[in-house]
Image (cartoon, rainbow over all chains, first blue to last red; front, top):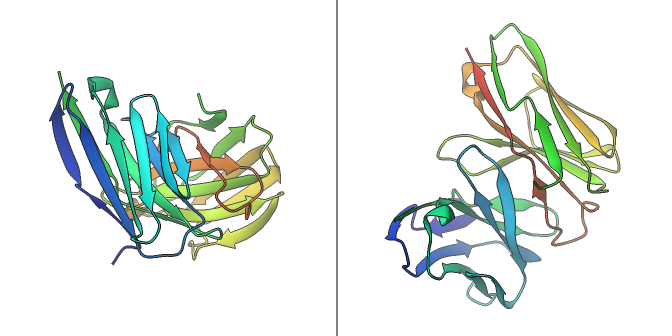
Length: 107
Length: 115
């Protein structure tokens, strides 16, 4: 069993829809990261959070430390949001990665 | 642009070839990482260098040999690879390893195919 589990694995949405991607982890963390990987491979770090909630544009990330759960929300989704979203748990010594959620936003 | 570059972007090699992947970061970071990403699997951390010293080697076969001549450059030397080594190899950098919660900046990756 992977230390980090994401759901769903694949997600297709219509442009404009509100999207939620979930991440559950089983290790103690110093921070939880959300990454975005576009076709072609490049990875961009979206958020690093250790408590509460962060917002950047149309993206919102939340974390519940007690429940070991984090969510990534995308409001008013757009085709350019199509990518793989990866959750990563940082224990301070090591990163554990989820397998990613592949998001496709249809115009 | 994340400030981390990788070359080449694509590489096809035979099992008897020797090749090298290169990573360069222009962010003033002191920690650099090699990751392997295979289809349908989580990112796998291969090596970590902190201030040019290798601090982690996650049971990587010896056919992969890293080199970190300075804090800005990281190489992955490849020899006698197997077809199952075909994957996307990603380099990343961050402020010093062990900073707890440090954000990593990733390069675009090298798509490696071993024939």
